[in-house]
Image (cartoon, rainbow, N blue to C red; front, side):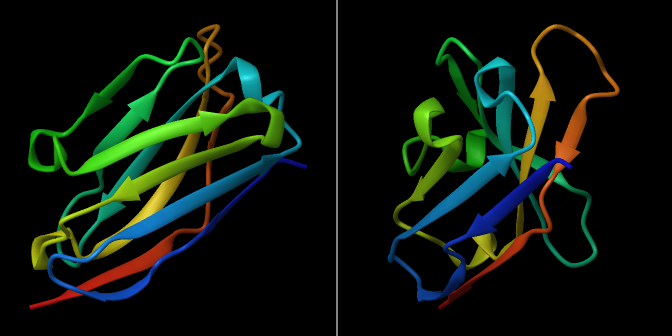
Length: 119
């Protein structure tokens, strides 16, 4: 059974920092491209940051320079360090694991963690 469990969300003031973690089980973590997505009320889910099996990263323009994604394959965990948080970063953040060999049916989501940034 595949599980992605996010943690680290919470309430923070604008300008503060949070570090999200996503621990995977039931998958071969090292062959999955990992991503963090977010969904604010009334909006579509959007990609925040992604990291490939080889460590290449990409970020949404809105978080470049503030957020950093990283992974630890030995711990089957992906992280999202969020600095200089803004109220518009408020959303539910979801972890995603996607098979790097193109097997599209091997695509998994966590349950989400709430991030709230107060002004």
